[in-house]
Amino acid sequence: MRSGRIQSSASCSASSSSTFPHPPCLSSASRHCKFPRLLSPRALSLSQRVSRNCLVPETTQFSFSKQSSTNKKRLFPVNVGALVTSNTEAISTGPLVAEEKIGVLLLNLGGPETLDDVQPFLFNLFADPDIIRLPRLFQFLQKPLAQFISVLRAPKSKEGYASIGGGSPLRRITDDQAEELRKSLWAKDVPAKVYVGMRYWHPFTEEAIEQIKRDGITKLVVLPLYPQFSISTSGSSLRLLESIFRDDEYLVNMQHTVIPSWYQREGYIKSMANLIEKELQKFDRPEKVVIFFSAHGVPLAYVEEAGDPYKAEMEECVDLIIEELEKRKITNAYTLAYQSRVGPVEWLKPYTDDTIVDLGRKGVKGLLAVPISFVSEHIETLEEIDVEYKELALESGIQNWGRVPALGCEPMFISDLADAVIESLPYVGAMAVSNLEARQSLVPLGSVEELLATYDSQRRELPAPVTVWEWGWTKSAETWNGRAAMLAVLVLLLLEVTTGEGFLHQWGILPLFH
Ligand SMILES: C=CC1=C(C)c2cc3[nH]c(cc4nc(cc5[nH]c(cc1n2)c(C)c5CCC(=O)O)C(CCC(=O)O)=C4C)c(C)c3C=C
Ligand SMILES: [Fe+2]
Image (cartoon, rainbow, N blue to C red; front, side, top):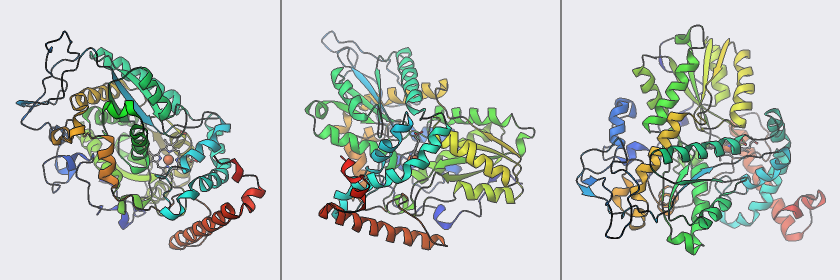
């Protein structure tokens, strides 16, 4: 088999080039740069792209004002990023002074720590309008619907969490990453505090924000721990932050900036390439192994209707990793597919399970799975990939299976995150004045409000991605049956809520919601 990208026949037209208009200031590197999007990412080398990403405007100088007339100390070295080019003008974000207290808020999904946490965790997830976005008229049904779906899904989810030790490892791993990031920042002369704010489980984002206020943080860098941006992940966390910020006098006045995605950073790309290179060496004939990037899926409508940049960023990310591997003379065949689909609607394709079967059919004997959308081990790596997909691969004729571990606390990766934070510091607060230069910074930046407005100004309705129930013989019938089922459930819930009677009350489910 020739090296290069394998186009699985499981793939459909929906997975090819995306047609949605790119928001002007979201995170895909090529969208930020002044280059037209005519050049495919593959046409540029990593170093070229890194310098394209180095969007410090040519007229901009990275020089923090030294000491001001008072006895305030500058906290950082002048040159905060290795990528700084010849710039001439100062970004006037003001001096970074000893009185400033810098915080970094890591945003993540969160996961149930015990089996008893599973249903309430699922409730929180499905109650999120960025996961199930109901038509305006039906928004009052969000919580009852979340209760209904979480109760239905909990047994299956619990089985999964039971098989990985009775709970999600996400909290422990994210706490470790926060501590390593803190150490790395201090080692680089940036005495910052690092906080963890989870979207659906403890420590909740609200708890982290309370701590940030107690600590008197004056400058905050918000860093979602998802390399690529999606409405359903970073977007959802930012929307929550927006509502917290809006209602709080302290926070309204606290300067902040957001690093919405960072998949294009050299340190991240090299760390991923290192892991892949190391795992490949464990195979008898490494050059014959297909590198199988498996990303968490999202419903297709997120990308095609709501303008989620997730797919474009994912594809560019894979291109960058492959380019880095090629520089190391690793030219294996590779492919990208999407996993963890739930529910009756169509998700990004090709699906991971279909692609594995397809590769087996084509005679592939060695596969190296690379989880690509997340930087911690979690249920979808430990159970779905390591157990379900491995089993499917072996059944499909693939004899040699391997899996690249998630990045976790890899030193090069953590150090690169620290650099991303440091490079963003001159822009903290600059977003308030809608500073164009700040948006074109070393890492794509924006304020919470700006970023949300960019990707989601119209707040389009999105199909519910989750299973209420499914039946049917064809994909299309499944989709329509699913939609009909959704409608039926909504009507039932509507009747139940208005009359106070029905099957949810009989089962004792409805009065539980809060
Ligand atoms: C980039 C990563 C992720 C995207 C995109 C994403 C979208 C998304 N997820 C669901 C539904 C579920 N996700 C669940 C768990 C889960 N999701 C992610 C990451 C992304 N999700 C992670 C890391 C985890 C695991 C956390 C852990 O505890 O280890 C679950 C619960 C598990 C299960 O029952 O399968 C659900 C449900 C949707 C609907 C969605 C996009 C709309
Ligand atoms: Fe998920």
